[in-house]
Amino acid sequence: MNTTHSILLIAVMSAVVIFLRAVPFLIFRGNKTPAFIEYIGKYLPYAIMGMLLVYCFRETPIMSSPHGMPELIAIIITAGLQVWKKQGLLSIVVGTISYMLLVQLVFA
Image (cartoon, rainbow, N blue to C red; front, side, top):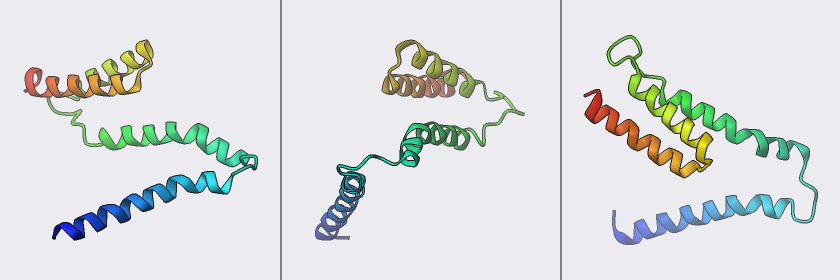
């Protein structure tokens, strides 16, 4: 793959992303947002987070050592930090770092 091909790929992908992000603003310009769209906007992020949690922990070995303890401890740290500080990025970064430290150093 040459440089021109890579640049064209990035340009097309960027244009598609920008277009998809702009479509809702173009469709609902000046109009009242439908109740269904407001409902999706309110509850879909929580559903996505739930699905990501299920996906991430679907193969956690709870029947063999360490019985999912690094994952459980990292979840508790992440959730506790989120409740305490209410900073999503901070919670994710600290939770990820704590999980990696637990897996590499404590439960190795």
